[in-house]
Amino acid sequence: MIAAIVLAGGRGSRLGGVDKAAVNVGGRPLVDHVYAALDGCAPIVAVGPASIQRPGVRVVREDPPFGGPVAAIAAALEMLADVNEIWADKTSADETWLLACDLPRAERIVARLTSEEIGPDDGVVLVDGSGHVQWLAGRYRTSALRRAVAGLPVPAGASMRRLLDELRLRTVDDPDHAGIDIDTPEDLVAFETPDPHAKPHRTKDCHR
Image 1: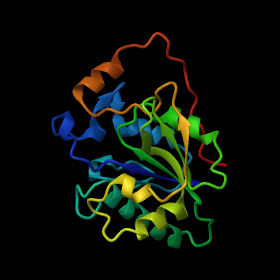
Image 2 (image 1 turned 90 degrees about the horizontal axis):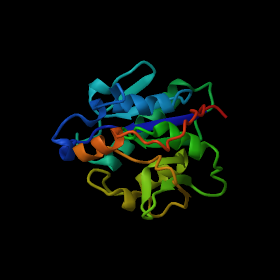
Image 3 (image 1 turned 30 degrees about the vertical axis):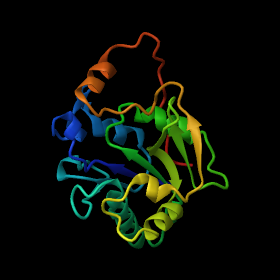
């Protein structure tokens, strides 16, 4: 099994302060696109407000609230550890998906990275056409994430670069823009403009 962490605790300031996870895209909240992509993963831990609760999803809040993505990851990993204690008779997840809540093409991300082996590395992540690594569109060794968090004096306010800089991550090109996110109203308008060249993508199961 592969676990999953979904980060949904941001302020959505570039979207006018709205709850980004609840923004309607294609007839459903953004976060539901991410949950759908993770069908079959267990456990799924989402970090953010109570409104992101869904059946099969455990919700936790980062400390302090709005403390940033690294604080959110730290809180989610604690929750995963608690779940593993409850599931003492089961094998804990060696790998964990790490996805932001604002990825309307999350299914494409999961499909793209499921076909990639982590191998000797600590994770596989998308890299966009500009060469920017998409930290929150990746699949990681759970132990590597724990090691990275443990190496920080304080998770709150730390950058993703600082968290993951020491990990060996293999980058995977994203030619069809699977990692597109919705940060601004303009992003939303651009995403909802029909793409005549779009091709259907099938969701990959998180079971291995």
